[in-house]
Amino acid sequence: MVMQTGTFTEATRPTVPGNLLTLMIAKARETTQEQGTLRSLVFNDPLPKGMGTSWNSPKLGSLDSQGLTQGEDITNFQALTTSNVVITPGEVGLAVKFSKKSLDQWTENMAIRTGRIMRDARDRKMDADIGGLAASFTTYTLGSATTVLTVGHLIAGKARLKGGNNTTGAAIAAGAVSNQVPAGPIWGAFRWESLTQVMRSLVGGAITGTVATTSIGADGGPGSPQKAVLDDLFVDKVGGVMLHGNSNFAKDSVDDVVSIIGHRDGIAFVPFSGGGVTGDAPFVRDSDDGRSIQMTIVDDYGFGILDQNYGIACTFDATAATS
Image 1 (cartoon, rainbow, N blue to C red):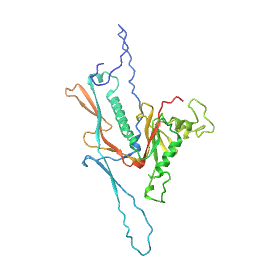
Image 2 (cartoon, rainbow, N blue to C red; image 1 turned 90 degrees about the horizontal axis):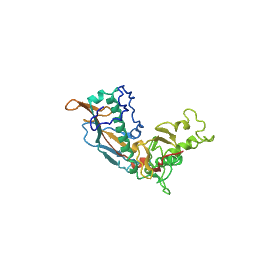
Image 3 (cartoon, rainbow, N blue to C red; image 1 turned 180 degrees about the vertical axis):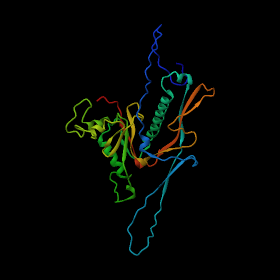
Image 4 (spheres, rainbow, N blue to C red; image 1 turned 135 degrees about the vertical axis):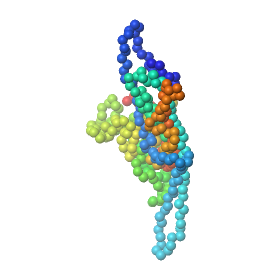
């Protein structure tokens, strides 16, 4: 089978000198991967066609309700402030090219299979881009190099975000502007290696050991925490954090990862749906001479931090687990 230069390469087929029998070639296998989770966890807001090149998100400030004196007009007028976040989408994409003859030699539709692989690559890229914002959350941080993530850290992260601008030894007036907190669920996304200790604590011990009868996950029927931690992608609600595993976070050479505990409104993902964007379905066209097909998948999107107070940069160890 002859492939175009720059496409995929074919594994060596087994041959026997002088053997004219047709050799059976098994169905092609795909390199499997996890589905991306981060785009679904953050704020999504498309930039429509005809609305310029940048997406703007003005955030209105808060006001304080105050006590009044009967019979007197309100004279203490408050200013409604705004702050703006600007995100400019940019294009990302990839392309492959096959000779039509090479495709006709397969017993299955390799163009369709290739489209699936292209979408997987697109998915990983989006996860990597959004996950790369984790270190940019500098107001609140959690963990440090070589620190092992525990359930206690998750509880602390939830308390940190729900505590607002709460620092040790700083007085907070009841209902004060300084103590505004994000409303709704708090989520966390970590590499699976970092989640090992958390899942072990729920299951009841090392994977190869005996499940302790006093564990939260002991016995563990359907729907129990013990069952949930063995599922894929979404682990469970642990310590008030909707916990997700994600293998697309970058890990450094000493096995540390900066990941995120955050709120939906902490990060914005802004897709642009204008011309040239193919989305889930690759664009397919014949080559100039008609002997090949070209497949292209293109996305146009931007991403950025909406609110520093709605996310935590979490630095934890991600050494490969052995038990």
